Length: 343
Image 1 (cartoon, rainbow, N blue to C red):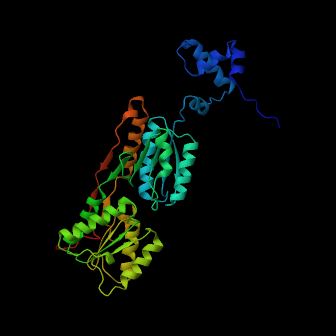
Image 2 (tube, helix red, strand yellow; image 1 turned 60 degrees about the horizontal axis):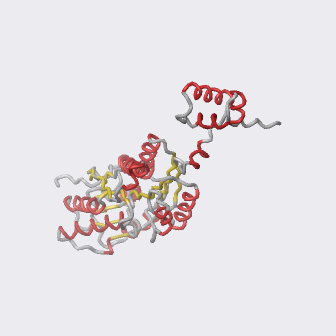
Image 3 (tube, rainbow, N blue to C red; image 1 turned 135 degrees about the vertical axis):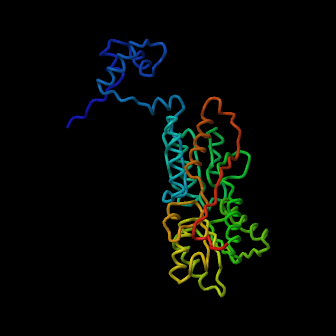
């Protein structure tokens, strides 16, 4: 079976009796070629089945119109919402998106950062892995002046732009709400506190306790990888406590839903015996029984903001854009998992 012949600019030039350089400039919409000749060139190219090699042309222009995105995992409602926001803005600006997931591993994150660099992405958006302890693998992006922005999990230092929420404030408000509902013995289930998001939520929890004259006890903080298995292990430990908690602040709605189900199966009433607040406002929070109180974490808005910020840096006037931390608003949503009658 014979292969179909690849049409080149030389074939178009021969058919139109024009020079190959004229065809090339016409296909690039060069101002030196008049409109009528451009139309003839484009019409003939389409008729002959010419494939416009945008990738090669972009490489010559030192652009690929591709933005790299590295996230910890794809099976997350928040990450999916953030990616939707990023894609919306990139697509509107003519950029493609190349996605990798680190699976919460610094080694994989470093490997994918190198891959993104080799693929000549025009910019990179990153949500750091849970165990990332240094970010040296991103230094080549700074060295080559490739815009690099961090979303959700921020990075300290004056070289980086971060798009985040005020996690300390969100943690404080969630805990203060539980205290306002009469809780005095509140457990906090959180993720890896190497990451600022979980460390800040824990600090907000601690400050709320202290501001309401309650003792902060490290034994009441459980650091997990926020998976189903680790959450079940924590719940087994909690149910064996001599004195059960009367409140739970959980840094993830999925895990909060597991806590709620486990407690109900153990015969406990929610919120009368134990009140629960989750985090993220996932779809899960609205379908539990009772529905979960939670912190609305604006994933899509975060994606849109970080993508717009990156696009601005890729424009000619954006090279001098200031490094900044952009803080988005979050909101405590109170539902029946924590709302006690008469309080």
